[in-house]
Length: 131
Image (cartoon, rainbow, N blue to C red; front, side):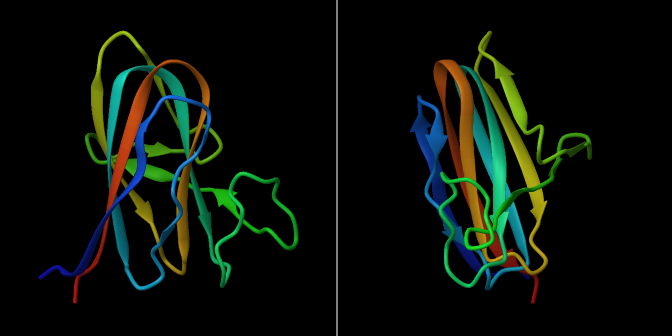
């Protein structure tokens, strides 16, 4: 039975390079992300942190701003997507993806858009527990 479901938009039709809205996930075991690329040519990467307070995901990583890119698993075929690589969209057509990330000990989640030249991306996250 799923409990404590939290649904939040992290990127809302983001049509420019930059970060989304950080999401606190410290109370949840799992996070599933729905991604919608609207004829987009861009790359998204997943950012995570175990820090007590939300880091500045738009700033460089530092001792007092700890975060890193994190791996996700594509639920279509089970492929692991390296955090430093992220997911790229070529803009030829709109596309949907669903991925899961390992949230063991994670407190904060965010996404960052880079290399955007067309279209937009929307990402919604559902965090939950199985207990």
